[in-house]
Image: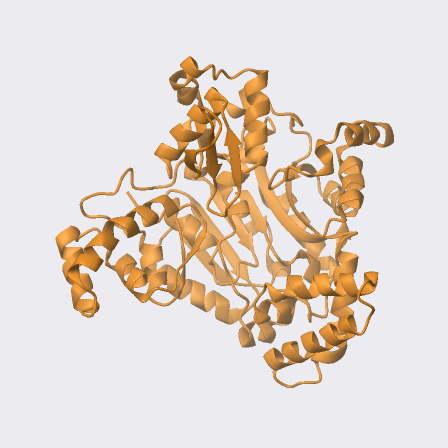
Length: 495
C-alpha cells in the first residue's frame, strides 16, 4: 500500500504472521491496563493493508468462532490470500481488494483493528482516514494496533534512503537496482574516516538493511512516500478522532530508561501526569525509530501500573528450558533464542519449571497460585513486581485463551492444516502460537505434511521409508519422537 498498485504486484512484499498484532496479545495488554477487552474466542478483527493474509489467515484458523476481514490495494496478494482461504476451507474470513479511502462504516464494527507496516509510507489523507476508521468502526472496548516509523531515530534512516534513492533508479531491474544502490551506500560509508560519526550511521543502516529481503528494501527504502512521525504528533492526530493512548504492543526491554528512578523523577518534573509527553521525552532518550502503538476510545478507565487484579484473570506460560546451575538450588532458564536467566529463588524456580512442563499450554494464574502456595508464591505486591520483571525479560508470557493446541503428542499426531499446506511449498510455516518456524530439511518438511491425524508411529515410519529409502529404519525411527517433540513445543500440533 505505500506505493502504486503495480509495484506490489510486480515485486511481492514478504508476508508473515506478526505475534504483536494477534487479538489475544492485544487483549492481554488491555487487561493489564485495567480494561475489559472483547473476548477473543468470539470477536471481529479487521486488518488494513493485509497483503496476502499471512497474518490474518492463521488467526482465522486458530479462532474458528471469530470473524476476520482484511483488504489490500494490490490485486495479486489478495488473489493469493483468497486461494489460501479456499484451500483451507475457511468460512470465518474475508479478504478483498480495496482502497482504504473507499472503506467506511458499512464494513461493520470491529473489536480489534490492525494497521501494520504501512502508516509511514502513505500520504496524510490516508493516515487520517485510518484514524477516522478506528473512530467509526472500533467497538466501545476495542483496541486498535498502528505501527509506524518514529522520530527522532528515523532521521538516521532518511540519510540512508536519500543515498539509496539517488542511485537505485538508474537500473531497469528493481532487484538489481537495490544491489547497485546498496553498493553505492557502502562506497559512501567506506570513503569516510574509520572513526567518523557519519560513517558509523551509514554502516548501522547497511547492517539493518542487510537483515531484510531485497523486496522489503525495494518497497521500504525506495518508496517515494516516507513520513516518520514523532509520537506526540501521532497522538495529537489520534486525539482528534476520539482515540486515547493505551500502550505499546510490548513492554520496554530491561535496559530501557523508563525503569530508571532518576529518569522517572525527571519525567514527572518535566511532564507531570502526562503520559504522551513523557513517552515523547523517552523517545528522545531512546532515539526511537519504530512504534507499535495501541489505541482505545478516549475516556476508558486506564491504569498505568499493573496490579494483582490485572494479572489474575490471565493465563501464564513459558517456553524456557531449565538446567541445573552451579550454585546450590539454582537453575538456568534458557529461551529458544538463547536468552538465559539464573535463579535459586524457590518460588521462581517452581514457577518456571511448572510452566516449562506445561508448555505450549499456558496455565490459569489463579490455579498456579494455589498449586505453588507451598513455595511462598502468593499474588501480593512482591509477586506483581516479580511477574512484571519476568514479563519484561520475556521469561514468561500471557494469554487470555489457549489456542487449539494438542494437550500431548497423541498416538496419531496431527499438525495444523495451515502448517501442512505451507510446508508443501515453503521453508517457513506458521504455528498455532502465531509464530514462524523455519526448517530447510526436506525430510522434516515431508514429515510435517504426513501429520494429518490418520497415521500412527508405524504408518509414519512406513511413509518416511517410502519417501526416503536411502535412510535406515533405525535413523528414521529415532528421529520421529525427537521431531514430534520439537513440533509439539513449537505449537504445530493441533488438538
